Length: 544
Image (tube, rainbow, N blue to C red; front, side):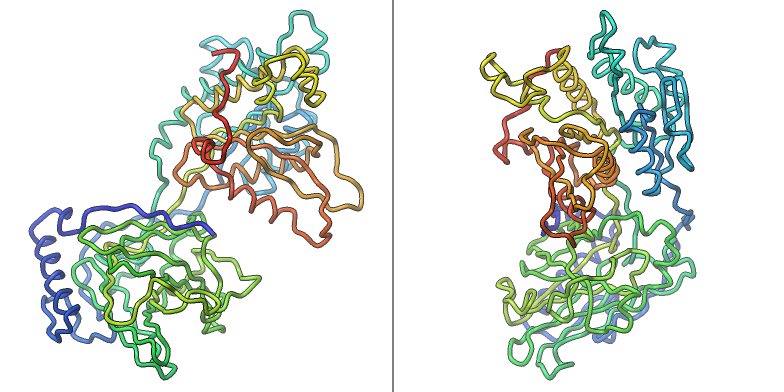
């Protein structure tokens, strides 16, 4: 399981404009000092009168945002009428993409696909400046472009043909068209958009169109089961503050849970497009959990989705990002298999836990008995990661072909490296480098030898690897599924990834091939981390 992404920012008292923010932070520090030494006083008008539940605080005005419907992501597929390209078009259309098939001349394979827009005359080779502008007009408005360079047998039989015109120059021309279409400008930030789920500072906003008070949090301590721990939560300025005392005798945990959020999440029409939860926290260095409950769990009161994070001690707040896929489905602390999906649109409550136990009753070694202090600043936010803007379908063996230094070494490799007809592997690798150096978020998919279909009556799973060591075969349908999945995988703050795909028969006939593929794709390392995997840097291409 991945670790939450944590970054540090200055505390509100150091960053919020205006004297009011500074006064609130100073008041908080005074309150925290008294709490940590066991004092009973409460200072500051922001502190709620009843410590056992966060009380309503009058809302402040905030501009209303429009919660629009969720449009489909738009993808253009270059080379969409080829044997592989047409399968990719069909797979991505089935996965919910708005697909535009960009073909050079024929369209017989893709025109039969339901819901796919077909554009003929999209020639990526021998393109002048005017041609690039025409290309840009078809690419404008897309979220992603999939490039499937393809050359027919007749192309190879033609005198003077070189794969570089298609695999390199064609790729370069598409990238020029994307530049003219403005795709890079629409995704210039390294992080995707965010949206507030629970706003600690205001309450009249897009996720709470009816207005109303701040979200109330109530304690869920081990006293419910005869324990001795206790805690309370209150607001101070735009901070949710939670403090108490954990006693290991009789239970060993404190928790708080929000009021019902169903009305708020239902109002967020784009909730399902987000990838995780972000919050800014400060604490005492202990490991806390955030808990999420969804509509599916209303009749299962002990169940929730949980993820662990450290609330660092000090004057700074830390920004913590936790992907939904890193949450663990638990009943109390026991991990439960086959969980329902965790969808932001179904969230009904959020909460926090400090417990002597981690998961499956294992010990949380970073929890200590005694007083604790935790606060979250600003909001609990949904975030969306970046996705690939360019997906290039290349070929396995093109990188290791580039590293061949002798004829003996070449003849000891697999047949495609031995033959390398018209230096096609060199051309494919040069096209990859053009994509990696383009400045776009990218994915490069390298299938091994292609075949028409999988074996009859057998279960095949897609094997994913990095470093160009795979060999074998894979069906075009499997490659199409890998391309569609890879285009949807979030990029966790990185620019892009290159990987190979092959097919292997699974001894487990009950395995879910789609789940196996998805799990492998999410475990890939970005290209800039290749040295950490023991993979050599990319070799230099033959063409610059």
